[in-house]
Amino acid sequence: MGIQTLEQFISKQQSKFPTAKGEFTHLLQAISLAAKMVNREVNKAGLADILGKQGKQNVQGEEQQKLDVFADQHFMDALEKVGDCCYLASEEHEEGIDLTHQTFYPVGKYMVYFDPLDGSSNIDANVSIGTIFSIFKRVSPEGPLTMADFEQTGRQQVAAGYIIYGSSTMLVYTTGKGVNGFTLDPSIGEFCLSHPNLLIPSTGRTYSVNESNYNQFSTAIKQYLQYCKDMDKETQRPYTSRYIGSLVADFHRNMIQGGIYLYPDTMAYPNGKLRLMYECNPLAFIAEQAGGRASTGLMPILDIMPEELHQRVPLIIGSDKMVKMVEWFIHEYS
Ligand code: AHM
Ligand code: MG
View 1 (tube, rainbow, N blue to C red):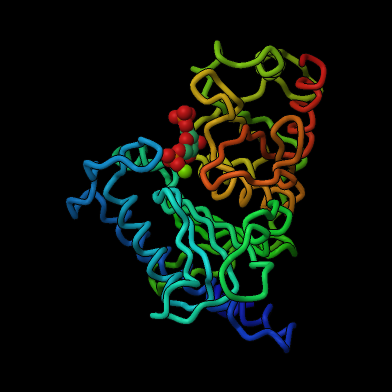
View 2: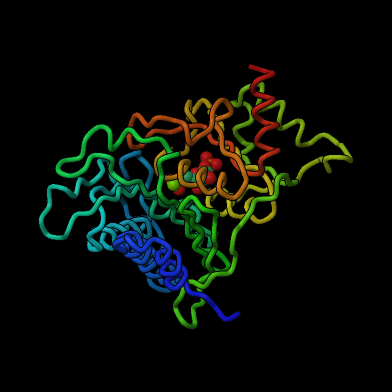
């Protein structure tokens, strides 16, 4: 069996729906193109004076890195030009962009939420970073967007994915029929199918959490972390602690090897740090599609009704049995 490029894979999937107009195919192609451009910049980051801070803060008061701005511009540009979107929202912009008002490019039915460069505080240290995206379809037929278009839970996502710029660059996505991973072959500039039908092991030995926040965690989370460190032959505890501090990288490792990632509420972040629309929802969709689980500890991430664009929620995500165990601790100790 020879290689199968992302484009070939998408076309093959699309051919199963003879009435489809190819809009979704174009959208994924646009994302793949922007990902390649960001990858190129990430790879030459040390050379091109693109490392370091931009000197501005984004809407959430975090310092923007130069590559954040580059990635945001390229994803925005590619998604706007493709003409299949009606709304674009990025971590880097306070407001989403309603494309139904513009006349320059065609307007389509897709709403895309994305984090252009997640974990960007790691760039200067050459640590893996990522892009995360979530795609919805507007529910109102046409014209201006309505509240109903924004009031969709993560279960209504039509696709979601991430790109990890790591020791190799991978694009992993789902359209609700399993998860597939593609590795960028730099010699031909194409993402090639490398991880068909990805499944998260139902349990693992790795837990990822920023443990410096321990004193701010609830009793339930403290008890769970103690459980991770306790000795038990059957469950192979103590578990191993691994925290990169780059969500896509921590999540991807757990996808491949099994494990759990937690960003619970803390005093500094009473609702957790991570954002529902472009960090938690897309990864939760992928996790569930790969046989894993994603929860706030009290409810599935995918059932949360969004209230605002940059809404934060606690995130517990990864191997099914491990996430269920945290839910059990939260139930017992709350
Ligand atoms: P960012 O979107 O500003 O990069 O923040 C999200 C990142 C995640 O990648 C990572 O898991 C988390 O923040 C790390 O936060 P902390 O440094 O508090 O552990
Ligand atoms: Mg982020």
